[in-house]
Image (tube, rainbow, N blue to C red; front, top):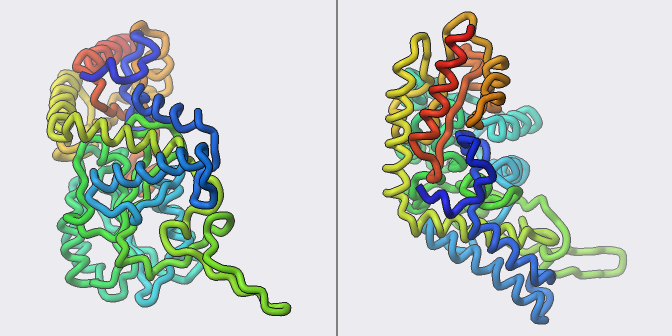
Length: 399
């Protein structure tokens, strides 16, 4: 489905590693090149043709993205990706009240580490929502959320446990029990196949990465609701962030611009921003309903084919809402490393992922050392799964 829209370098490889990084959209890379070809310096400090063209692309990028996720353009900043977004939040937000930062056990280390360091550095309590039957335990969350809670960070879809997270339930409880808490959502694995409306979600912040939706590497979106901006000290300083400088004898007084310019010091990834906007618009134009149905059908088929094989544990529940299937082979003779090598020698072969997926919290809770993960995007078809299953069966016959 939509294979012609992507750069697929080899027909001999079934690509099932989109949760790490999606293959790239031709439209997005053309958009990247269009901006780079102007070569000028964006920003509002210059008015010549080359500069204004680049700034126009940058401004329109925010307009396109805001229309799709139902935000305002000035509620969006571009970052280098989801990891950068969470680090910016952790470094820049200041907490007026409360001593608890709550994250879930499903979080990627890109969420876990920045808030772990913030809690340690600033003497906050880091509280982790446990799992129950592969889902976040809502009943436990009701007990740990309180007026002491300052930040709640939740993934909308784990990169290791299949399915998705019903964040609406957690947001509702948060609004009731900790109305001043700052809620940030990780949509990196979710936006690939789900429509997002930040106003309906009523979160304070949301982030995702461009490379997971077919855009280039090193570009991401951080949405922050304008009503929540009073919780930030902007920690990025430099060109394009200054409102005024007053020199009074030996005293210097600097006033900085507000959000989003407060996070946009120096040259921005103008070409990446435009490419991300074009990639997201492509998905929206295809229709998230169509994308979701297609990926759900692949998930169902994967589970069906894996059920043909004995001694496999699938990690997750309600898998059809997600875009990954992770499993653990329980055969004691099975070596994941040997299987990777075996797969690489086959033609056609399969690109997939093994290990802990930078999700150490969930691996610790589930007492697992790693998984085999298959992940899907709109260019995948059932034949990709068939290739993987055939190789898996062949490997099992040889051990």
